[in-house]
Length: 246
Image (cartoon, rainbow, N blue to C red; front, side, top):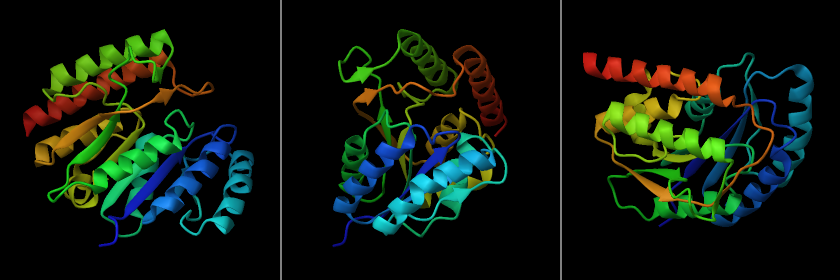
């Protein structure tokens, strides 16, 4: 039997300074796995940044057939919007996935999660990478991000009544059939998009599992802890209100 197929999206915004080495390694690792396509989605950066991204990606496309030509969105949709754009226009596969562009989650960890997903019998369970064991030496994060992560994880599990420790880790695999069922109901495209994705999967009957991974925080991100934490909290409350109405 051929391995289950995976379409892996990398959402990017102003990531030309961080994606190069990670993308090259990811191409090598997934080539060995087989059955994986990769799509970089550039989320509405300016022309100069788009040109830099193209200079990084196109030579790798010529070397690796499974790295598809990048998608350049005309305007910034948010991380979730970029992920969904890549998923919606991707090939027909068994699994849809995304990973952050900064390499905090290594190519090796991506491959490990794909292997784990491929071992599942039907019906398939969504697989979410997790940094929940934040005392582990495998998880290297700033103490502020550790604290915000714990607070937000508690907020999500308490308000939405979903047993999860880390909803925000930037590596997830979702059965394509499950995503197609819930796609019309997904509205949030910002940083809290994966909370809405999680809630929609849970409510649709698709189970999920958290898998602990190694995480080495890469400097240079665009997340503002206080501002974006407030926005994400508001999004969680909005998700809760919509679920109550349904």
